[in-house]
Length: 151
Image 1 (tube, one colour):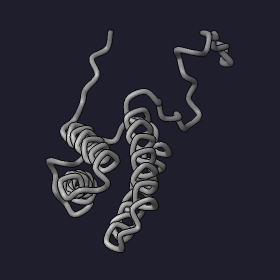
Image 2 (cartoon, rainbow, N blue to C red):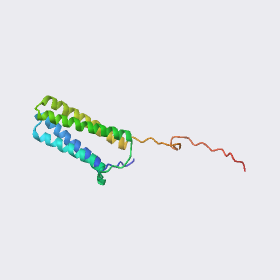
Image 3 (tube, rainbow, N blue to C red):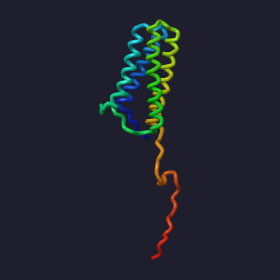
Image 4 (cartoon, helix red, strand yellow):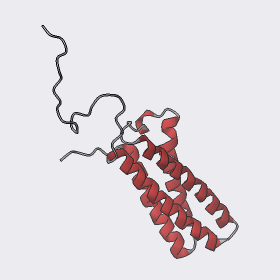
């Protein structure tokens, strides 16, 4: 059985998601009390820092390139969309529109879960497509090569 490596940024993403779940659960139970807002904002900041700092040159948060690039790009799009929905939800909370706020927090939770699952799947399970003219030796049968030169 192959050993799966789990990097530090992936740990931060999972930790941030667990914080988010705690904050969104408290939000739905207590109608958006301040503790839940702090937990969700802290979770969003961890996810944002873990995503943005490698783009700014922080090496220890940089992820090695592996897995499907399309899945990782799709996951980042979902992540940015969840950030936008969270900002909109915080605006609604500021305006005391609690039913719409709770709907958006539920939508952000769903988006974040899909994002995290897509991100982890695209890094650890999905294999990138092999480009080039070479045959994949594992899937292609051995074909003998004819000698066209006579000695």
